[in-house]
Length: 85
Image 1 (cartoon, rainbow, N blue to C red):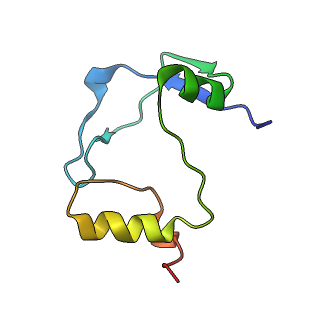
Image 2: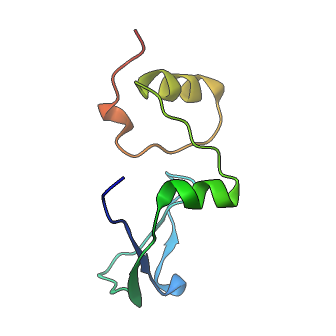
């Protein structure tokens, strides 16, 4: 709650979709941000936009369920998630 999170704005044309991770875009060269700004209170922003946010003690069961579902998804560092018990 006390961390400051920043939004980096980039020129979209500098990036291309990365097929291995749906929704992710990459660039093959160094790209400098157009501007950087703090985003404010993340929980308040989620609530204001109607985004559902869940707190779970372990993400492993969720990652396992997503893998079994066949749905496209991406979880950064999913390999570090502890498996379901």
